[in-house]
Length: 169
Image (cartoon, rainbow, N blue to C red; front, side, top):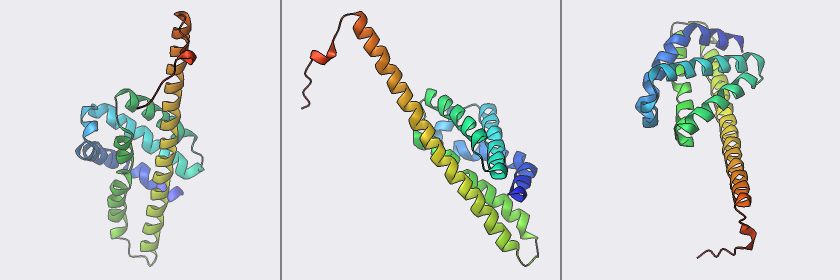
């Protein structure tokens, strides 16, 4: 959707400035993220959203979300913290789109607004689902790395955990 991409490019700075304030106010975990870092992350995220809107391919978005996953996991963010921040994108966009279409007197302006919002919300929900998949993959990789480390360490010291019987109780 080229029109929405053009709109995002035109209003990107304004949207990012709004989100840099809105996200830490809504998601307390982001208070510990320096504003320049949050701003840079949002710039990359909006650029990836734009690519996804135009091409329909999530490659750039996947790369950005992998970076966000790694950084936020290392900062001990909860999954819900990042999800809340992603879900703050549509309200920020909605306000700007309303301003854009408020003075539009054409007959189909409401329909155009609704189409643009629907497309952006769909993109956001796809990004949220993609983020959850990436986050889950990241956690599984961390678990597997830890298990491999434990296995090697146990072998190094001659410990065979298969001979231990563990009772839950």
